[in-house]
Image (spheres, rainbow, N blue to C red):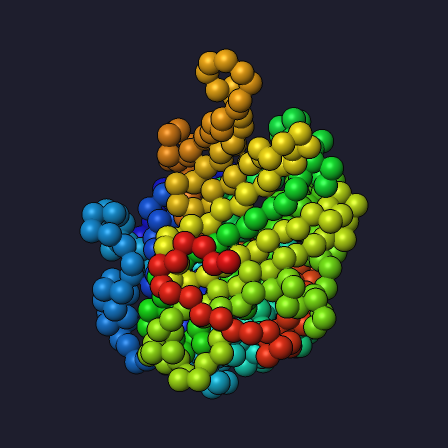
Length: 468
C-alpha cells in the first residue's frame, strides 16, 4: 500500500483521512472518486491516506470495494489495474444514517483507530456529497461527535468541503453560514464552485494582468458590453425532481455565472494570494446594482423548454425556469453603464461556456470581440478587422485564436475536481468561494427569486441556438 511520492510538499508527509459523506451517491462516483484515483496514480496524495465512505447502505469491506470498482466513472484502460487495486486498498466504510448521532460516534471511533494504527494524529477532510437540505444536520452531528476539532493548533488540521448550492436563498445561506461559523474557522471551510477550478477560467486573471495592452482598456470608456453564456445541450435527464426545486438561476446563475462575472470585472488584487483574490471577487459581487420589482421585466427573461413538464419528477404545473437571461450592472467607476449579460439554459443547440467582451468602435459598427472559451475547445480568440484586398478601404473581420489543445499546455490541464481536492489538501482557498462572495451573490439573486411571479414564463423549443 506504500507509494513513492514527491515529499517536497509538507502536506505529503502528514497522514490524512478523507471522509466522504454520501459516498454511494452520483457525485462521488462521477467526480470525487475518479479525481482521487487520478491524484493517487500521479502520486499527488499524501504518503499515508485513507478514504472513509459514510452512507446508509450495508456493506462488508469487500462488498464496498467491489461497489466502488463498479460505480467509479472511469474509462477502460484509463488507469493501471495495479493503481486501481492499491487505491481501493485505502478505502474503508462506515454505515450510518445522516441523522443518527450514534453513527457519527462510530465514525469518530473508526478515525481514531486509523490514527492509532499510524501512531499519530491525522489530518481530516470531510466532503458533504449530499443534497443541500441535509447539510445542516450533518454539520451539527460532526460537531457533536467532536470531529470538527483539530488534533492541536500545530498538527492534524480539520477541513470541510461543501458543494454548491449554498442554500436556496439569502436566508438559508445565512443560516448555513451561521452554523458553519460556530463549528469551523473560515480557513477550515472550502466551498466548492467547481467552475472556479477550470484552467481556462483561471486564465482570465493571468491574461488580464500579464498583458499590459489590455488592462488600460478594461473599462467603460472602451468596453461596450460583456456577454457571459453557459449553455447545456442536455435536458434535465433523470434529475427532474432535483432540478425542479432549483431552476436555472439557483443551479448555475447564483454561482458559476456570477463567479465568471467577478473574474472579468475585478480590480487588480494587491497580491495573487487567496485572500486578496477572493476579496476583489467579493468587492465586485457586492457592487452589483440590485434588480427590484420595477426593473425586473426590463432586465430579466425567464423561460422553460417545451417538454419540461413531461420530465420524470417535474411537477405537472411547474413554473421552474430552464433558461434565464439577466442584464446586470456593476456600481464601480470602471464599469459604469456597461451591461453584463448573464445567459444560461438547458436543452440548447450546443453545450458551451464562454465570455465575450465587446469593445466600442466610435467610428463605425465593427466591434473587436475578445472571447474566453471556457469549454469545450478551451482557448481565447480575438476578432479584429483588416482591409479587404483591392481598391478602397473596406474592412473585413479576421480571428486570432489560441487553443490549449494546440499546445503542450493541454497535458497539464488537470480535471477541476483534481485541482480542488489537491488545493484542499494543501490549504489553498483561491479556487473556493468565500463567505463574502456567497452572501453577496445571494443578496443579488434573492430579490429576483422573490419576484419571479411578476415575470412572465415563456417557452422555447429544444435545440434552439439563441433566445430573444
